[in-house]
Length: 342
Image (cartoon, rainbow, N blue to C red; front, top):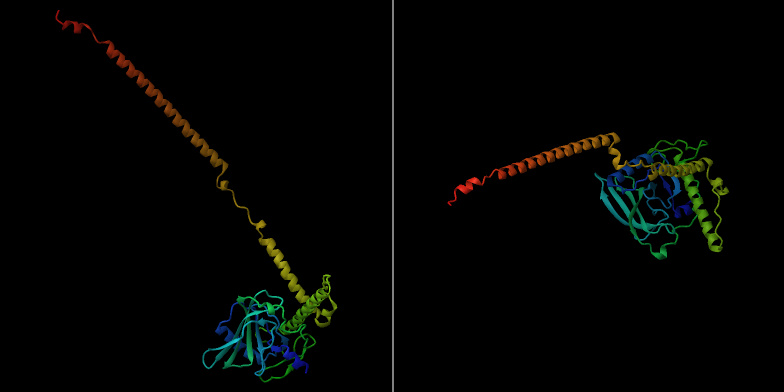
């Protein structure tokens, strides 16, 4: 009864391996490759129970959805109906695509930019395996009446059922966690880490506790004018649900990201950039002094030549003046008198 109620709230079976973050939309070949590899891995890898809630941009999930079940609630409100179309995938395969745009998380997003695409092999594969991809699509304005209306009830139910095989010879068999933290009989899947499913579930529980504290703070802020008290990170309810290992791992990753941002800023900030050389750095004092002395010598030579030319010209002018005086003084008046009759 509890499981049926949790499934109505969005509980589903998901592949435990992390498929990574893919911010660009998947091509048909990529979606087909993920589905075929997922089908092969699901024969030997049990799926874990969990909720899909407010997935981040680029998140890729592989879910097992029975044929009569609807797609689970993912914590996102969409402002348009979902469309469906089919694409030939080569041979006898047919890829069915469900696409919905303009989704947003009430109370968190300022624009409806979330887009979801889910793929399944309607022919030539296992139709109950659903590949879901969340990307950033076109942005639309949020309808004011829907901006703060929650899509589901929080906090989400804590469901600690063991993982179960969904395909192959072991279909329906459950895998109980061993004392060492792994799962008994757990083979390797699509780069599967035996403890990754448990850590993912514990991290999901931590996120649920964070959302619960936020709701309690908002409720206290609405009932009282005084600002709500911020709960300490080491609150008692975390230790009741989350293991010390998962809590330490999450805090380590968060602190590592913070320190990486600090050191990146310190290493690549403008204050550490090398200073630019001055425009005069291409010259040296010795070269400038040598060029100055050379120019001075050339100027003195030119001045000396100019002075010599002026002296030569002055001497020539004096000679010409003296010659002109001599020629005028030699003219005799006797010859002029002889030619005139008396």
